[in-house]
Structure formats: structure tokens, C-alpha cells
Image (cartoon, rainbow, N blue to C red; front, side):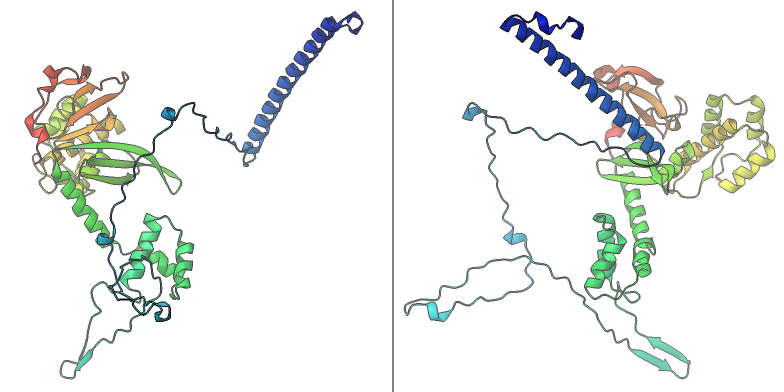
Length: 420
């Protein structure tokens, strides 16, 4: 561009303006190239810092755009009326106090007209230490001391209020243990960091029992359930969060893997594993197309009897020691699914709704028995209906049947929509 620019050729104002435009274009080109070079240099610096274990330049978002100017009042967003709930009836009062008027400011004809109630909410955070005097008796004849127990909820040197508040702050509001310790010490509670840690991680059998009861009640609530898993990190290790739910409850479980045995463990709330060889199990074995020699050896195992995990693994090691890893997994899956269907100690889910995850599929005779394409979804987005109890076994797996077709959905049995 500079080769075409000759100052001596400027004869008039038009030539000068043309020269200035060329110079401005050249400056703009250099500016753009400079910005691009700066960006590339910053990218290289960030990469060097990343390789050195450091952080790169932070991404700073631009400022928000100012509000638009509206040409008409009709274009403005109309504010909604706020209907505030009356909360006086819902507020529990703990104390009543009378506020007196200064009699010196009242005229002589002032008459008392009662009280104007005003509820003021506040919170009191202070230590409340109790000295329990436990009765003690001694029997000389039995040489035995009888001591009165503490009231329910009290155990050790700290009451239920401190324990429940520590759990609330830690797990519900994500307050760190050092900050909880500071808060308790500000209230003149003498407690160590180790004791606070024990409140949060130990002696939670009551919570586990409550969770087990809720989970079992949730499994009984409907004949169908959703199941899915997602990756999670536990102490720097990759694990999986298993989610089982219906509209009435949601249960979460953290497992090291997501195999079929793990799914069955979740469905049985991690009770002791059992294995069963019956006609259903051998149906799965046939679907896995295991060698006939393996099937013959399995026929020699005890049939129609629930076997503990240790006993079943001992039989496999003794009679089928040459099984490959995949064949061994197939045998364990088949026997475990059959045992889950036959057991009576825990509710058996009739229908699982999930994606087409391989750990939830065996054959058309077992879990995945129908796949429906979601309306408006991609080709691989399949809502698979998994019948576990074996009541409904059509063989349309992943056939892309549209949910818009009523001829197929009419085949769904009525028990799917009824609890029990």
C-alpha cells in the first residue's frame, strides 16, 4: 500500500483526502495484526503457565448492556402486584412484653384503648448448660449401684442442640468445620475440633436406618422407577452416583463402578448378594451364548436355591476355573438377576425407566424389552422401558417406535399405572 503512496502527487484536496484514507486503513490493519499477535502471545503464556502448574489470565466478562430506551410506555414491562402472605398467624411468640407510654406527654383527657400488637422476630444464640443430678442407689446385698439415666436425646457431654446445629451448618449450609468451631466458641461452648468432627462423621446409625426405611417405602410406592448414574469424584478417585427415583422420592448412592451387579446392589439397598440358578437364569445364560461346556457345568450347580456370594464364587472357582473374565461376569449377572426376582425380603421393581445403558440390558427376555424414541429427540436419545419382573416381554428393543403412535402405547399393561 505504501508503494502506491507518493506525497509529491498530492495536487489538491481530493488527493490529500485519498492519501489520508490509505494511511488510516494501514493503521487499522496494523492495529488488528497487533491485537491478534497479543492474543496469540497471551495464549502461549497461558499454556506455559498451565504446564508449570500455574493459572493463566482470567476471563473477564464484559460489562452488562445498559437498559434499553423504550419509545412507548406500552413497551415497558408492567410490574406484577405482590400479594404478601399474612405471617402473623404463622409466627410463634415466645415472650410478651408491654411497652408503656410516657405519662408525662399524655394530655389529661387521654383514655386507655388497649394494646397495638407488634410481633418482632429475633434469634438468641447463647450457651444453655444444664447440670443433671442423676440419682444413685447402692444395694449392699447385691453389691450393685443403680444410676438414673440421662433424658432421651442426651448422650455424653453435649446436648442434642449442639449436635443438630453442627449437622445443619455442615451438611445443609456448607459451613466448614473451623467456622462452626469458631461459632461454638463464641457462644462459650468448650469443645475440641476432634469432638466436632465426631459429631459430623460418627454415630450416624439412626440416620442410616431412617434412610433405609425411606428408601424401602419409596420402592413400594409405585411399580415403576427412574434410574440413572453420573460420574463423581470421591477422595480424588472416579466413582459413580446412582440415582433412583419416582415423583415421590429420590435416593442417591455412591458406588465405585456401574456394573449390573452394582445396579442390583442398589435395588436391594446393598444387602448381602445372593445368586440363583433356575430357568430364568439359564435363559439369560442362553442369551449370552456361553459355550455348551460351561452350561453343562452350571447344570451341576445347586438349582432353585439361593446361594450366598461366598458359596457361589467357591463353586465357580472349583468347577469353572477356566472361565474368562467376560464369561464369568455373564454367569454372575444371570444368577444375580434371577435371585433378585425370586427374593422376597425387598420390593422387586417391575419397571425401570432409563437410557440404553449396557448395564441395564441383558436380552429381550430380561430387563430391556422396549425402546421408544422420544418425540423431537435425536436418533440416539432412547427412553428404554426395562421390565425387571418379567411380566411384559415384547421384543422391540431400540426399534425407534414413536410415542406418537397410539397403537403401540395401548399395549402397555394397566398395572404400570397403579401402585403395588
